Length: 229
Image (tube, rainbow, N blue to C red; front, side, top):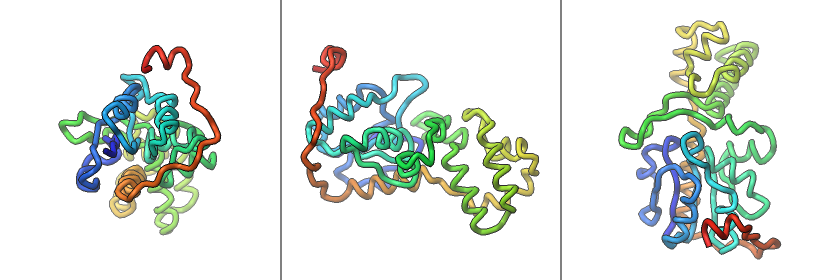
C-alpha cells in the first residue's frame, strides 16, 4: 500500500493518483508512524501541518527508510524534509526540492501558505513564495515586465507575512497598479507546488525498487522508543 499525504498543494489529488495510492490529509507528527503501522510499502510526503500541530518528525522518516520503505517528498513540507533527509535516502522530486537541496532556497517559509478546510477542497487563502517566484520568472522570460519591475515584485512579496500575501498585496507593496499586473497574471500564473505534487504522484505510480544498501544505522533514542516502540 502506497500512502501519500497531500492537501492544498494538490486539492484534487485523486484525479492524478493511481488506484493503489491511498491519499491522506497533510501530515503531522506521528502520521508517518501510523502509515507504517497500517502496512505502507511506500510513503509520499507533499503537505504537512506546522501551525496548529507538531510537524512531521525527521525521526519518523528515517525510521521508515531504515525499514527499506521508499520515502518521497515534493512541493511543500515534503520538499523541505526531502532536502534535509536526502543523505539518508529520502527521494526528493521537483523544482522546489531541487532549490532547497542546492541551497538556492534556505527559508522554510518559502512554501508556507494558509488554506481552508478539507471539506471545501483546501482552498488557498494566500500565495507561497515558491509560486510567486515561478510566476515572476515566467513573466520575466516572456519579457512582459521589465526586469526591474520583476525584482521589485519579488522583493515586495518577501516583505509580506505569508498569511497576508496575495497578488493584490504584492502589487500594492511594490507600487505597481494591480490593474496593470492582473492581465499579465491571467496568462502567466505558475503553481509550482501543484506541478511538483503531480510529479511525485507520477513517480509513485511506477514500480518502486528497494533502496540501495544503507551506510547508516537508525538510532532509536529514548524519546523515540518511549513514543513509538
